[in-house]
Amino acid sequence: LSLSEYNMEKENLSVVLHSQGDLRLEQRPIPEPGPNEVLLQMHSVGICGSDVHYWQNGRIGDFVVKKPMVLGHEAAGRVVKVGSAVKNLKEGDRVAVEPGVPREMDEFFKSGNYNLSPTIFFCATPPDDGNLCRFYKHSANFCYKLPDNVTYEEGALIEPLSVGIHACRRAGVTLGSSVLICGAGPIGLVCLLVAKAMGASQVVISDLSADRLVMAKELGADFPLTVKRGDGPEELAKRVEGMLGAQPHITIECTGVESSVQTAIYATRPGGVVVLVGLGAAMTTIPLLNAALREVDIRGVFRYCNTWPMAIAMLASKKVNVAPLVTHRFPLEQAVQAFETTRQGQGVKIMLKCDKTDQNP
Image (cartoon, rainbow, N blue to C red; front, side, top):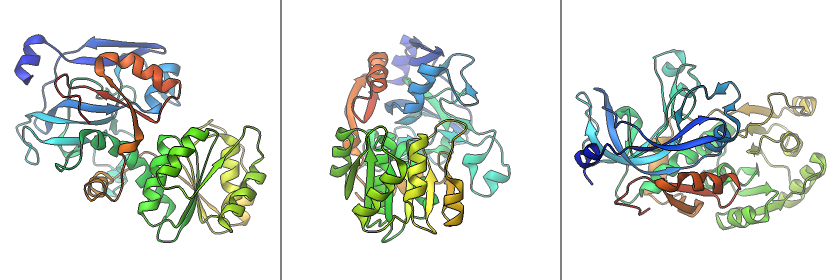
């Protein structure tokens, strides 16, 4: 179907969160791109844990849903209309969408850390609308052309992959690093893929779920570690050391669970780095003195910056394979069912297919 046909039908089905627990499918007007924007016909959009969290809780920390908001921020689509000042894209281009667009050239933008800009626009973070819809407009500078050998779904997976790239960059993963990853959900798994691609020699990955660890092993984990509720952090740290023969240089914590953050600190070797990716309680009790006396650096991670070009190059050259992460697909019309499936923790990554005429990957 062409844009004009969708326009005639006024068809822009969108997944809208009205308030906590109130998720609806509704028609919205097809937006008109500004001079520096492009209109995209969305193709594949992944569901993120944060989308589900907003639906279930109505907020994440200080970000509160106060008015209806379109969900979705892991997206790829096709350019169907180009703003008057856009030079880098044309109609028909297949693109991956970087959801965070700085609104001003502040100090963070100038230093290349635009993810830290307090005024940044970010898809599906209140009050900004996301792209889980048929048609969506976005800054052309934050849409990246996909090579022919990279699918739309791979394009959508660049968003979670970027979290892994940024986390591994912050951690300083390099040739020969030994790494512990706490949590084998979608983000733990992309951290695994990126750490291996960056040259990590040995990776231990831990999770409560044996199923998730099977997937982790298939994706290249050297040592899957099954954790049971109630396992002591210091005892788990010893088990990690036993598996590797030494403490890991780097721990990437992807759960946000207090006991897991404690394990991360105890497990990391002196002079090493702990990177916190998972979001937990605002106040968390940790063995800070243990980290301080052993010079273990604790580093935060907030989203990502400057990752899309690298991610596209990694996918196009087959250095990283994200395709196995997609375990379920639903047409956009079945979005509520897709969200329910994600909430129940089934599968790894669930993709919504937004183009009625093309449901391929």
